[in-house]
Each structure stands twice: as structure tokens, then as C-alpha cells.
Length: 312
Image (cartoon, rainbow, N blue to C red):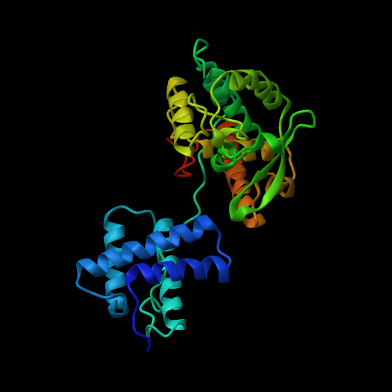
């Protein structure tokens, strides 16, 4: 067995290993490193070195995450990160046994996303204050999210040099640093054109020189800022659902499917690696169709869709 390095040395070596040798993306590697730091903090509080962490210790830490209300998907990601770390320690001969070997990830149910109606989106646009300087930018943001189905991370990273307004498309970088071409709707193109003179009239910082959507100081918008913009507009429009930028992405896909778009085309536009991810919108559409049947067919109009029992 090799002598155990310091925690910081191990984490640095592990980070290089998962990026250079396993080919993980920068974002995934950062998440795994954070998971290992969380594990190292737990071990330190209990007087343990990382080579002395047992299966019971990992399980206890998972229970803590569960009790704190951490979502099953995040718990599963934590297990994946810690499992990768212990595999690295074992492969490098720092430990003999992997304490995560018999620990199962929590089951992650497939949930149907919230979707806005076209009327909801129109109401959000109508709620834009006409006297605010940022309104043209925010209007363009809403239409670009809804009109192209972008992830919020893709929106805030939209590059001026990768957008062709004349041809109506943009090159975006999605998950796994994979690039794809997405179409821009005529409405998006028009709103972006309206916003550009205002963008140029304001300050533009060096880091924002090639970024489309900027804040008032001329720096790139953050994902959190876009979340607040969308959330506040939904509240102003009186929408009761929990609305985020991702809700507009879900709405884009659902409305395309309802309009007869091909599932493969939707998969390509969303940048899903697997068609199985896109198929969740089929389930969503079937749920909507069933609701329509129960609401409007004369034989089923009095059936409660949640109980499927006729009312008296």
C-alpha cells in the first residue's frame, strides 16, 4: 500500500485524473470534487483519514443528506462522485477495499415537467414594464428561451460571433461541451435586432465583448439573474406555477410536439444525447390528451381524472 497523501494533494490528483484520463467535462469534474470535499469534511469531523472511511460512514453521510432534504438526483450524483474517488484511490493502491461497493444509488423517478400555456407566455411578455431600460433585453431573452428551447447556461453564453441573424441560427455549446446549431425564430431575430443598439450604447466590459446578453454594467448575465427575471415576470403575470428558464425549454418542446413536430427533430434542437430523454414529452402529451378526453367526451365528462371513478 502507498502512503496516503494530504487531502488537497489527493483531490488535485483526482481532479486531473477524471478530466485528463476519464474525459469528464469541467462541470462534472467540479461537481465530483465538491462531493469529495464534502466527504473529506465529514471524515475530518469524525477524526478519520480518507483511507479509514467505511461503508457505514458513507451510508451515514447519505442519511444526513437525505435528512437535510437533498433531492434523490443530487444524492445519486454524490454517490457517483465519491465512488469515482474511491475507485481512483484503489487503482492507485492507496486503499484495499472500496467502501462504496455495496451502496446503491437512490431511485430517481421520472417526473413530468411543468409547462406553460401559450397564454401564460403571452401574459409574461405583457407584464414587461414598458419604461424599463432592460425590457428590450428581457423580451429578447424570453423569446429566445421559448423560441429555441435553450438551456439557461446556453443562453448566457450566446456569442455574437456565433449568431447569424440574417440566416436565423445560432451555434451553442451544450452539455458535455458539445456544439449544435439551433434555429432562431423570426420573432427572436427581430427582438435581438431591437436590443443590439441598446447593448452597444451601454458599457461593455472585456469579458462581455462577444456575449449577446449583458447586464447594466456590461458584464455577461449570470444564470441566477436570468432565473430572477423569469420568476419575477411569471409572478407579475399572475402565474401560480413555479416558473424558471427551464420551464420555457419544457414548454418549447411540448408545444412543438403538440404541433406535430418529429420527436427526432425535437431531440436535435434540445441537444439531448439520448432519444429516451426527449420521450418524456411524449408522456406529457399523453397526459394532456387523456385530460382532454375526460374533460370533453360525453361519456367521461363526469369522471374525476385522479380517481377515475364516476361522481354521484
